[in-house]
Image (tube, rainbow, N blue to C red; front, side):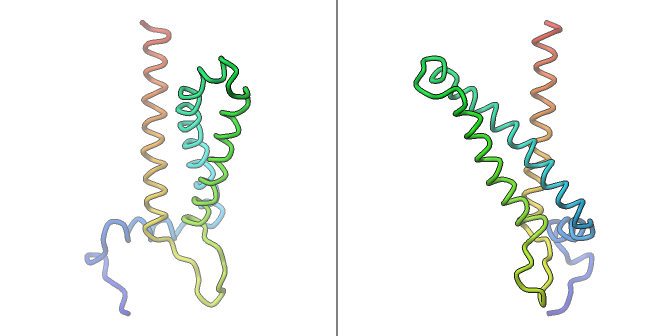
Length: 128
């Protein structure tokens, strides 16, 4: 199959090519950073949902932390698969695709949410 020219490539293919130009170490670091920020967001949601059950004694105090840790392991595995890849077949090198772009976009959206939450916390917690 012939390679598409720059004008014929979709935006996802262009972003995937940019991610493919990063070194393996940078992709691992990017996967870790995205995983950490998404786990922070998920832990906020889990804590808010389970705080009453923990206070009442229905759940152990460490249950929300274990849930966040489990979700973090799953997210890191997905990020590794999407951004770094597994070398199952040395004859066919790994290339980033749609999954890598979607995982990176989820990380960017998560970063925006973390920033908004931090700003709301500063405004309503300290200024108002």
